Image 1 (cartoon, rainbow, N blue to C red):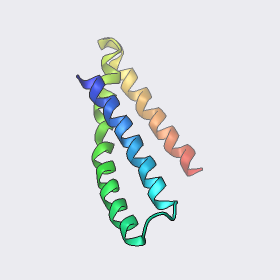
Image 2 (cartoon, rainbow, N blue to C red):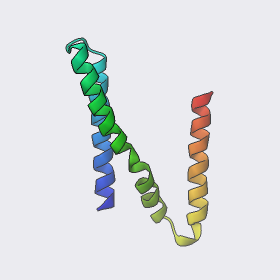
Image 3 (cartoon, rainbow, N blue to C red):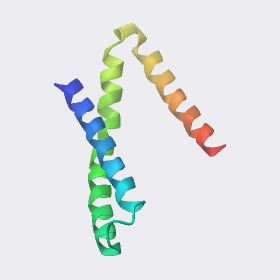
Length: 88
C-alpha cells in the first residue's frame, strides 16, 4: 500500500517537473498559457512534495526496533549535510 503510493507520487512528481521544464523553456506556447500552466503544475508539485514524511517512515520500518533511533539520526544528518553542500 504505502510503497506503491510513494513510488507513484515520486513518478508523478517527476513527470510534472518535466512538463514544467518543457512548457517554460520552449517557445511553442503563448506567455499566458505558460503562466497559467506553470501555476497549475507548481500547485500539483507542491501537493506531491509532501511525500518526504511517509518515505522516511517506510525507510525506518525496514530496520530493527533497536536501530531506529540511530537510523533516523543518520538520515537527518545526511539531509543536513546535503543542504550544506548545496549552500557551498
